[in-house]
Length: 291
Image (cartoon, rainbow, N blue to C red):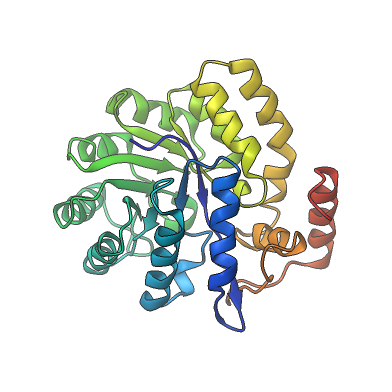
């Protein structure tokens, strides 16, 4: 259902509020550069420090501007199952085409708790659900067997895999079969994940350099492995630069240096250390992304 290059959209802020004009421009930039889908209100979008009203503003704006040209998979996760259900219903009401739901963080549920969490959310909506496994942020890993169990539920259609464990990701693909969408959650692992049967990526680097990410996915999925590999290695150093500090600090700083939005972050996200900012500027310059 969901394949290719999806972008984990940053949320532009201005004077503490969502900068709607810049958000609209970011959506148009992505669509013009071949991005296959938009994911607002995820980790990269700083949703953890946004209000429910701000989430609705961002999702509604992205849906409106996309106007059906590409799917919108809205972030709707919470470590509180009832809140995740509410966010999912909000996304459906606003016209999203699907939701991205992160594994509960902090609570540290068992595998059975994870299963029951996602099962309850799926029962509350007919939207397609992409689960999000990112143990580095949630402190819980979704086992391949748990993901496979959940894949039996009709509207749980995929997983964004950011465990960094390629063996585990291959096991998910094997257990869940070809109709289940495994999407990379790590830009530097996109091609390896495609190689074991993944369908695409929910990308951070695509915020600033979307065309090569989209072309890499299209090339691989279209059978041109050599072209995909060429683009993968072309992107590699820039992908690494996006994680020299905690995401989304580098990518939002990069977007600001490129004139796409302000560098404004919400605490506890803080401005980049000068040494890392210098490395980031050098990387952007190498890729010809600075004016």
